[in-house]
Image (cartoon, rainbow, N blue to C red):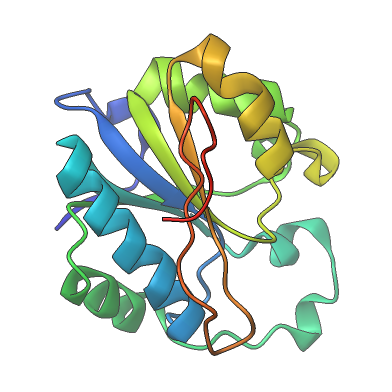
Length: 174
């Protein structure tokens, strides 16, 4: 697994299937999302990639940083992610400037700048300034930005199955 710590140094080599989030550890729901990502990447002939942030966004945004308990160290997390079959791990430095990107700016950077062709996100994933981006935002933008979005449904630490909505028809359960 290639680990990339600076997005500016990454050079597109193949289309990417990406999931993203804090991933403060790899619990069962995270493993399910990553497993779905790896499967989708293989089907779409993309590299399976995950973007996470360091430090954890709550540490920067002052959302109870003293109460934040990470499930695993960065080293432990990398080992678990590699075992799940990821091709690339992006560890993005998270700071106030990065947090001020709008959802549209961030999505544009992913699609045009990095070559993301497919996104797999958890059911409650939010991104961008003021957490304005969510699955509805992806769905509204995927036709204009040439990528496909999938939503992975999980319930707590268990799962009610992996149901992916596929663009362009959003034809339902898979």
